[in-house]
Amino acid sequence: MEDHWLLLEEVQAKEQNQIEAGAFVPADSLWFSGHFPGEPILPGMALIHLVWQAIVQDAGKRSEEIRLDTLKRVRFTKPVRPGENLSVLISGDQSGEKTLYSFKVVSSENVICSGLIEAVKIKR
Figure 1: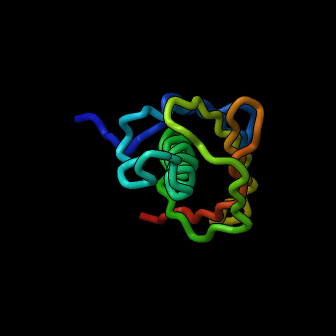
Figure 2: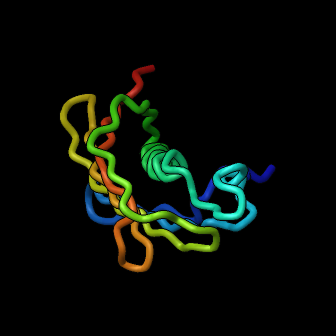
Figure 3: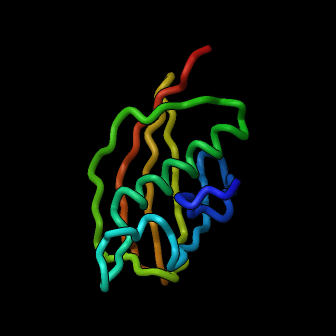
């Protein structure tokens, strides 16, 4: 079944603690529903969701389960319109059970969103 909320197209681990992801924002994405009629822009929450999904997918490749603990210093600097391609650049710094991820979402070399996500490993 297709996930109409998912924007990610690919997630790649680069150097140690580096993640790069690509995404496409289709005009028919559910994220645009009601946001805003006649002048659609991607909600900021969709960008945070995009970053988080890249982090979760990368952790899953290492058989790790994580949960989001904290969002810090999130900045939105440019709206995202239907049809845009996005790049997500993430670097992680692990300290014990916590990892602090610094991220940027980029469109056409312009940073449109940045911030920090702190995640915690789930112990089973």
